[in-house]
Image (cartoon, rainbow, N blue to C red; front, side, top):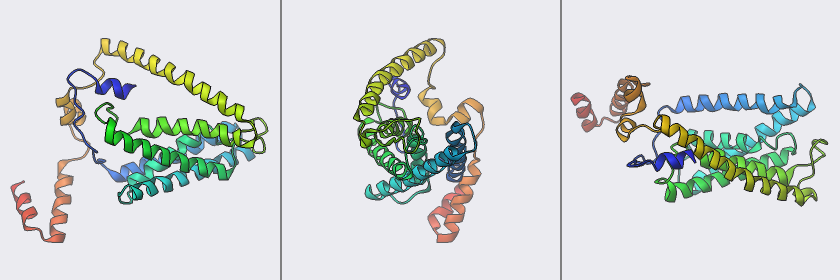
Length: 261
């Protein structure tokens, strides 16, 4: 909803097209911190260092791992190269998808949930790239990855949960209780419109107090410059990278460009 409203602001144009990450090593570092932190709040939900916490730790890791592989597989099928950023996206999707199910499914189901989540999110992202970018100002594909990933995890919980893992839970649809799936879908039908309306209301009020997005000029300049007057990464870093590339390949045109710089 936020991405949709932001992109529909009067006069706004979504001008970017598949922007490159500013710093891939930082992306990998951030994903690592997320992965480790996810163990904390998933396994920590057991409220004790016991068998259930250990089980949740393992299901969380299994889903993240298979989701990473699933996303890389989809990248290959879509003609992309194997990328570190793709692996990071897949891992986060797996962490999102397994969260509602981590304490209620077995290891095999956890791995399957991660794979299903990654494949589904990749398909949604592909559809958004083709048809929806001008309608959603969602640079980081938060809706396609977190929104869809969380929804997939919620539905999969209703399918794969079993009391053999957690007696305090319930049997899922694949264990003879399709009613749980029906209840889960009903919750989605109720909750999704509710948070869409609530989010729209909050954004409407916020927009009356302060503009919810920056101008196109500020966006093209980059918020580092337009808002803070400095860059996170010096342009000299990029110039040095080009110089190194030129020296390795002996490109006369690149060397000439560098002399002009």
